Length: 353
Image (cartoon, rainbow, N blue to C red; front, side, top):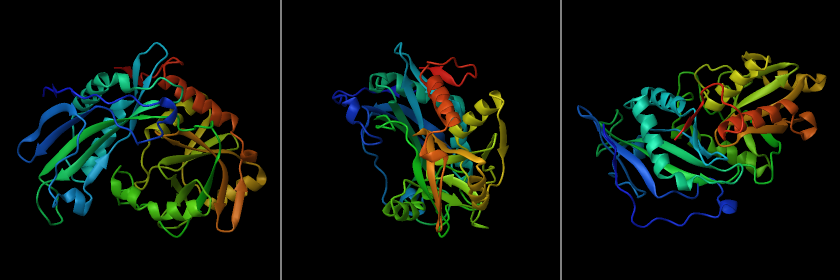
């Protein structure tokens, strides 16, 4: 399919990079195409950013048939625009689509749509350290019909949001509340898909934790309410002794692209890696014995988020004196260095637009 391009005649003013924040500003253009049963995907186009026109009976509004992705474009010191593992995001979008009974998008075509859009919006990729152009590919079910069954019509679109440094005041450890009343996902459910309902289901517990002064919620497994799963929009990792441990992917956890990258880097560094069940009790005991050395979350938005404090029921443990661990810092510096072209990419993770 050929992507048609219609450029805006009223370009927006570029934002002050020191005041961008996250997810509040949007660029001049968007990619969009449509799908119908029996016809497939059609009319791929880049057009001025604008509202969508959907029917009030669209399944996305009533039954939440929706999936999305999150990735970033970065500006290198030489002004090259770089994408980080965009094809992996395209593959994950398709896995989510299969789970939610939605049509897949050809990985190479999707990559080309992303690359073309970012090329058009390259002036929107900020230059300041720690900033990026956040990309949000999204698929929604459209069509005028009520009833619980897959839709026959879909939109797939990509929007771009210039985003400020995630850590405006520098990389600092966060506090986490372990949630044991609510659950995010169960095996056999939609936890491994990147679908909006998973995030909506997390809002209540996140609000409760925030009111108590915590930055994030650590979810436990739904069956036993004892094994750690993930934190908000991040996967979790723990340095236990000399071993980097993270929850295994068993159907209820989103397989993070950043998670995958950190595990690959760790193995290359000669660090022992374990993907397995990790109970809260194990973490508490490991903290008592000094075995729990570091903890951090991984995700597209923050890349690496160090954890300094974890509270479970009436117990609070402090990790590494609420300081950033040496390994956490090394992972952050290495991965962000690769993303912006400051460190050689020996993995072919980065592509130039």
